[in-house]
Image (cartoon, rainbow over all chains, first blue to last red; front, side, top):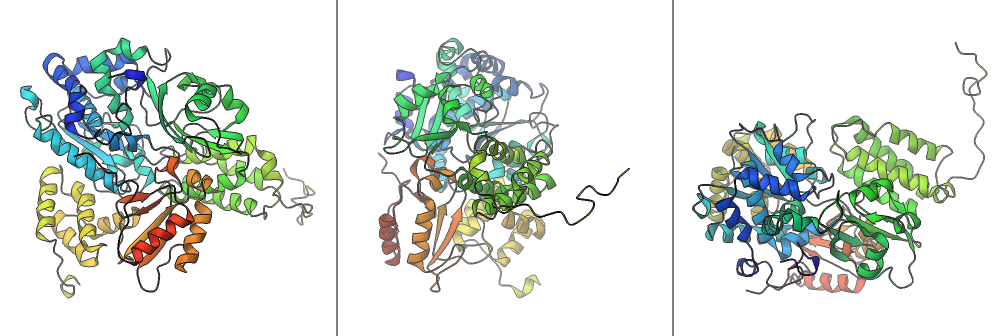
Length: 435
Length: 177
């Protein structure tokens, strides 16, 4: 199952990879049979913890540890698979569900078993209409084969699975927003604590995991934590799916061990830049993380710790490659439009701040920037970072600040050249004494 | 107010699906989003009489239903054009030419972004990231995506839609049975 280090992507690109018969013939549902027969839920949690699997949705929190937060005496527990994949630059979960839905379904059943859930939701973003149909068909196949429903494989464990279709809202990728959405509400995040593992869906303990995280669980149970740790680094074990976009030779989804040097990944796997393009910058972890210059990115390895040391984050692994021919001001305007559009509106710093950033960046891009606009952008960022219920506000601030800090001259050349107007008030001129 | 509107009803298949939803979701209110999808799939949008129907069926307030209709961009409270073309204008598609593509579509359709052609056939929208970043520029139509678009490919798609034929989308893969 692990030829060429393809722990998750072995069936990518195949016409028949979505079929239950193909998945089973290649070892699928073996982990489920084993776990239900020989392992307690605590055993499954221990294996995943020992493997060091970290959440692939963006935060990188250890999955086995997160599962351990569910209170031991909980009567009702829910398990949610986050397939809301909406972080700009990210398209890996789509591949996992499109080419290999049963891998994610098996992982979801195992994860649900590990946390003691009797109901599992797979939340798929509404734009993935065809995927909702495909996963629904695969779930039906799994029910028919006895992998879902009452008394699974005679084990006494029962699990229902519902594919829930989103309806267009980036914020539903945030776990509390996602839970509220399934409760039939607006997808606005809730303040933490309480964390969903203690009080989530309908007030019950709820675990939300990304598709890629869940899809890794069958492999870990089949091959063992030690085998998983043969890939990656000590603190970032395993493989990672990277979604690569921008003017490169071969855009697409790549699975490589964590810790691989960016240079090697970029040159040997992605094939470097497209003809005639030169590398200027890379956003490695989806649009919400700080941008790296070409020099910075070429000097880093692709794992959680190396990227943190380089001043950015691994995030969702949505790698956006930016060529010399692009204007950073133009690109940040596109991103600020996105965050402004997707802010859910409940926290003032985010609702107002994203709009202001978009407005000011827009006038700079159009060549109508005013004196003090770059400082104004920084001030707005300072009023947004860390001051809201969820990280969307920070997600706008991180690219904004890093674009401004690392490519400042591109912004400065667009600010109007005429001299600053003389302050008209005596207060502004500092002529009035203040106590 | 409600009695002046004609009563809403799902067709038999839709009603069977609705009953199954209510049975499977833990609370009636949690079935609201999938119920809105059922209505929209049948009607093309969620008409006011369907809101009344949901209030009755799921014990939710009308305000709650309207909240969802306005919060989620894919739910539509008004009748829509026959073909709603949604072009991604986020960063990766932007890097691969989404802006000139949108300009091309505006010119071909004779409408601006957010507008509908006078015959009600086409609407053009700019949308945020569709998760087609490696295959941009991308456009959504119904349940599917068209990817790696060029002006020539867009012309072919429009030509086909004008004849009432929805061309095969890139996400509509040929699958082994």
